[in-house]
Image (tube, rainbow, N blue to C red):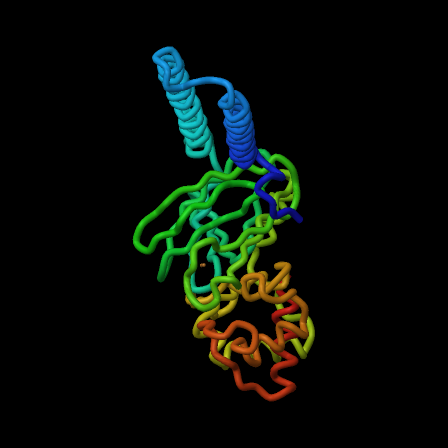
Length: 311
Ligand code: CUA
């Protein structure tokens, strides 16, 4: 797990980290030179007379030289910034295209493909293949959010009614954690995003699994759980591919059990948490759009069993 802008896991974050160290190095050098000159001047002041014509000429020359050096340094830093930005925003070759839509307070993720039948819709966990560029086409549903996975890239805002793009490349497999980085309301802090980078083969098998319809219930308990799902308010907001549930207001639950956490990183994805979350999301994420679901104990247990079977 990595969540560190200076622990770069890809070329873009590496470019940002490099620029950071250039700025730190130059600033440190300037600071030391200025302090060095200050000490030098204070020690000499005792036995020199700056008000003489000779001393004044020297002072003017020194100031002119300092202004020239400062201009060159600032120009150099400006160029470093410019070229880093060019690296970060260059159009990638044959990218994997993914649409990311930010909602209060979760991330909707859709893998775009020429064939609509190969679109995959998921939430809060972005899986990518190592080495291949990924281009995120990002927008927001309600207010401004910001996508930030420090180990992979800088921040980028998601704006309602407008598409921004962000390129990602992961150089090594791993899970890279991120957060929404723009205050977007009450649960801004509970809007995490995980980027999971796989070797290409492992990514393909993940993708094929996600493409498949939801697993059929194999036990009476899970079967009852699916009936509960279809008969309550769940079905008004969520989709489960392969069933009649196809609403897109909330996260797609076709493979919800394959995800590490629920509620945009708020809780570990385990049956007890899932059950407590369904009973009353407001306990964990006050202001969340998901209302409490009133179910008796057996229905809730069956529903939890069913959802936990959706790997
Ligand atoms: Cu979304 Cu902060």
